[in-house]
Image 1 (cartoon, rainbow, N blue to C red):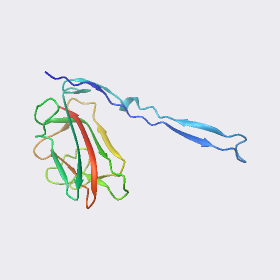
Image 2 (image 1 turned 30 degrees about the vertical axis):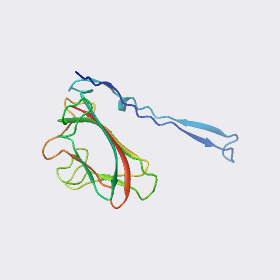
Image 3 (image 1 turned 180 degrees about the vertical axis):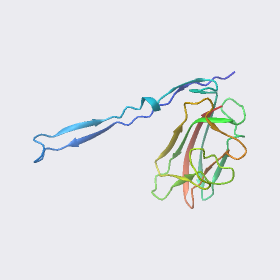
Image 4 (image 1 turned 60 degrees about the horizontal axis):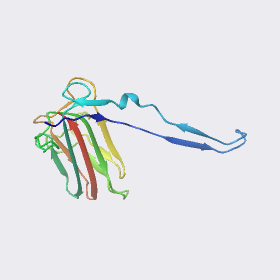
Amino acid sequence: MATTSGSTTLSVQMKEDLAASTSRLTGYSISIQPAMAAASPGWTNGSAAHQVSKAYQLSGTATAVATDIDLATVICADGTTGFTRVRIFAIYNDATLDTAILTTGGGTNPFKPYLTGTTPTISIEPGGVLFLIKPLGTLGWLVDETNKVLRLDPGAATVPFRVVIFGN
């Protein structure tokens, strides 16, 4: 039997170098590293808060046609079929051209519980990532007949992508 566990970490580490000027007698650097402990939970196997039991990953290229991922029927890493709840997902736009924008959120029976309204989408810019987690609560985002298809739409472009999903 497979078990799933681990952690998610969001990290930003930047530095601002300030040169000497009329308002600063000497130059110095400021470290900017916001604490994100609440966004970096640990995960154990199961289906309650801070728990996942399934993992799925996919890499590919969308070429002028949307790629639809049916979360109810995907084959997960442990060989089981589909999710009923999603806790974590990341969509990476691996393109290097400014015009290769990937959108998600549309289509038939769209998986978009993090968006409101009937037709909203999110653009993922080249080199960018959409990373969402729902560690608390007992269930995660519901995957059902009307909320199950994760669409990756490249428009007229060719967009390489990666998707990672954890849930139950």
